[in-house]
Structures are given as C-alpha cells and as structure tokens.
Length: 119
Image (cartoon, rainbow, N blue to C red; front, side, top):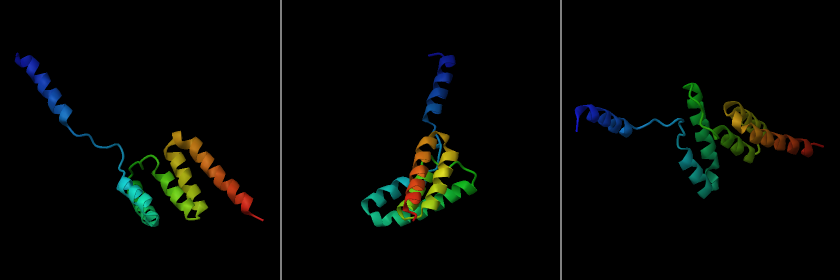
C-alpha cells in the first residue's frame, strides 16, 4: 500500500479509538435510583446525594443533566414539600425548555392540589 493511503487510515483508526467525554455528569444517579426502587427508605439518601451533585455542578458552572432537577423536585413532592418541588420543576423548565410542557403540567397539578386543600 502506498504511504499516502496509510497515513489517513492510521489517523482514522487512532481517532476512532479515542474516548469521548460524556455530555453531562450524572454522578451516581443510576445507582441511587436503583437503590431507592429496591429500598424505598433510601429516598432520603437519594435526595441528599442529588442535592450535593446538583450543587457541585452549579458551582462548577456545569450544566445539570436533563431530568435531575425534576427528579429532585419529585422527591421533595413525595416528602410533602410542594413549594420546594415547584422550585426544582421551574429550574428544570429553565435549564431544559423541551421539558416545559411536562413541568408546567406538574406545577399546575401541585397548585391545583394546594388550592383544593385550603378551607
């Protein structure tokens, strides 16, 4: 083979083997989610770890992975902290505009629920 052909081939092979960095840092989200499904009492641990991860991402000026704000909001909602849940749903909506319809529906459901429970 000619050297002219070998050089681009070698560059292509070496470049194809390079590892790419993930777009987002998920932390231990997958493991936390699995543990919280297997042992529901681990939901508090999941909430705390997600808070730590999100805070670290925000402080490092990194983009929080899609769905993490919403997941944390849901954990707060499940623990009875609707106002905090809504604030995280709004953060998800701002960070990921494509989630706007779902987050608007979630916020609306919480607000309707709160309005219905007042005397």
